[in-house]
Length: 217
Ligand SMILES: Cc1cc2nc3c(=O)[nH]c(=O)nc-3n(C[C@H](O)[C@H](O)[C@H](O)COP(=O)(O)O)c2cc1C
Image (cartoon, rainbow, N blue to C red; front, top):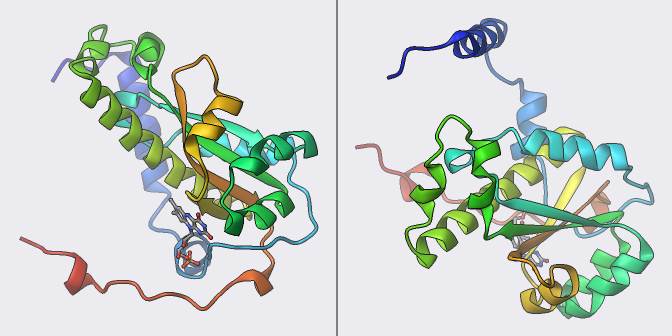
């Protein structure tokens, strides 16, 4: 490993300070993020502000991606005019609840993410070449990491007291032509945000137990 410079040492001290004051999240946080949080299908009549959308992004962007490539790009569809552009591309089962949502994020992927690595991974000038080995490698890394960032988005929304409704039931090509024409950005999935109406929630579907889904070797 390279010798740490003064910025590395400052980062190490900052991390150590944070860990010294932290044991683990309490039950309230674990419930709000995971155990009692739900995917919502309907919304209370309560708007979501620019500041709240910014706060979600400012949290999700800090969670890790491969070599910090950060390929997710977000379009927040909130105005009536923007919702009308999105509407024709939604599956019929997703249309009404998306139109009724305070906002819907198009979680998209920049397939030219490698052009930004000089900014995002400045200590390693050759980083772009790690990814530009084939179209498949570019695709896999972009899709993997934007999907991760989409998951971080859901958890960030929950962390700031909002609810999320992720959806893949829409025509990606239609959304891409409408919102990302002339770019190498492509939609991944949609995620509504707002304050969920408890009446819109169905009974919880089962989850695998540890023994079914996991192995410790
Ligand atoms: C990537 C993704 C795509 C989804 N697509 C849809 C969808 O198109 N329509 C829908 O009603 N729900 C969709 N869902 C919601 C899932 O069915 C829901 O999150 C899952 O059943 C867990 O529900 P729970 O969080 O309430 O336990 C999607 C969820 C994810 C993460």
